[in-house]
Length: 245
Ligand SMILES: C[S@@+](CC[C@H](N)C(=O)[O-])C[C@H]1O[C@@H](n2cnc3c(N)ncnc32)[C@H](O)[C@@H]1O
Image 1: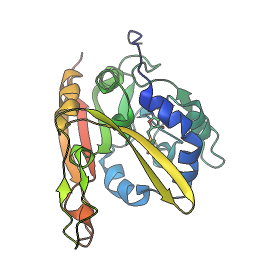
Image 2: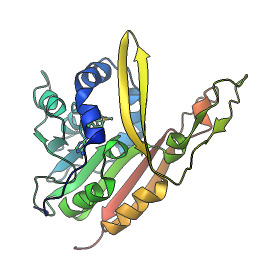
Image 3: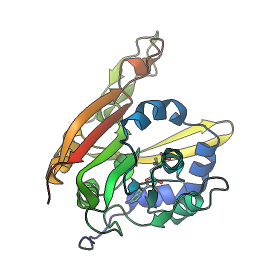
């Protein structure tokens, strides 16, 4: 195991407080997962000894991977999230409650780590990525998806008229800052807690963890009528451990 690290909890507490709403939201299909996963899941390598899902939430990615033959361990700091992954009525996923900065796993135990839409929701991303590097075996792969740092840096101008809404970055792209976003759909309300960080915050943390970026994909919708065809909403990175630590 790695050395025990102190943890910060602003985002983690926000997610835990919203866990029941998140479970209802995702299991009701109210976010973009159905389309997003079509781009993300093909990036994941074939099953190896162990695939660890960091910031697994209620376990939907782990369920997809189990169905593809992966032996999955879901890790989430929220008890409510981990319990819902482990007790899913049709496809339970083995799950532990742990902070991403203190993964309860030995060195080099995983062939694959998946972090789907979680690293921008984790308070201490540098030690979390260091932990991922620690538990990955040589030639093991991290496949991650985050909100694209361009899209978390700004927003479309809602007051503009016509399809070509300007996208405006009012605050510094280069500085990290917390945000919350509340969405309402089908009578349900869900508050997302995240942090905007510049892209280099992730690429530097990956390099420091000994992970080499193999692919970086910017995911924008291919519907030309959508404003999200002009600005990528998500970022996908595939990175591998190429040498022993
Ligand atoms: C947007 S949700 C994504 C969940 C899941 N990957 C999915 O897409 O369904 C972000 C998750 O990160 C978890 N999380 C936040 N901070 C964490 C931390 N420090 N360690 C582990 N998990 C954390 C939250 O509890 C939440 O379940």
